[in-house]
Image (cartoon, rainbow, N blue to C red):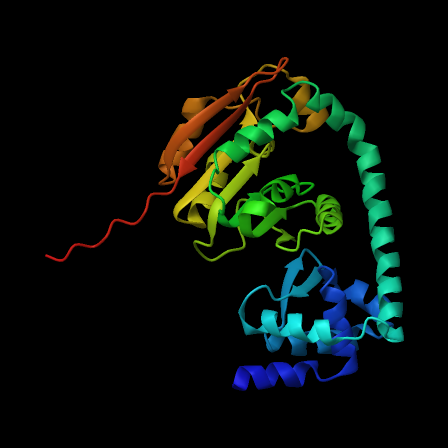
Length: 316
């Protein structure tokens, strides 16, 4: 009862209702909300704090940026749904907010397009060296055959493609990445696709921003060859996996294309099956299937590992 009353008091103010209506359309930074609402940063921040403290919003930091989004779980999430549905669609203030938000998103999209334009030639050249992405994705999906995979984490999410691929099967899908530019691209892609159960956040795969087991499935797609200590990344992924959860790694088999180091920042030239198996076993995971997808000249490999279920305690 007290929680519901606190939430109702928090939303009983025009600006805070506007905030909820805006965040219903996707997560936004404080500065973006300031631009749309036309109010000072301290004032907007106070409104956001009240909504967050009442359980209606979630707040997370991405470098120097602070993002806010609608709560996905709990009574707050259900309350927001009902309140926003009651807002009049023809309200002039809300219509102006939507128009200003559209302008903010268009500006964000232009910046992302410029980033892609700058890097597209290098990425396209790399894609031509290995098997078609669609074949890789079919292999990934085949290793998560269940209708629902629960909560999914995509490590090094990039453009958010893995989130989009598994979104229909996930209750919640979250991606992390160190690149602010790629996170911007991912947000745009997810918004365009209308994938409300998908979110992205800034995060380091060497120190995942979760205190303990939180996911039923984890994907690491073409990420490990960029980093110096892939074994640690696998161990960190295992740390946040629930019992029975699956880890799917997709990366290159060993190759000798040295120019990928200088032109594409690859630290490792692929991985042998035995190496990945050892990482998984050292992290307490049980290696399962391995799928090889030959390309010209790069072969893509997909590895599956499972976190064992807890052994039930037997009384003496």
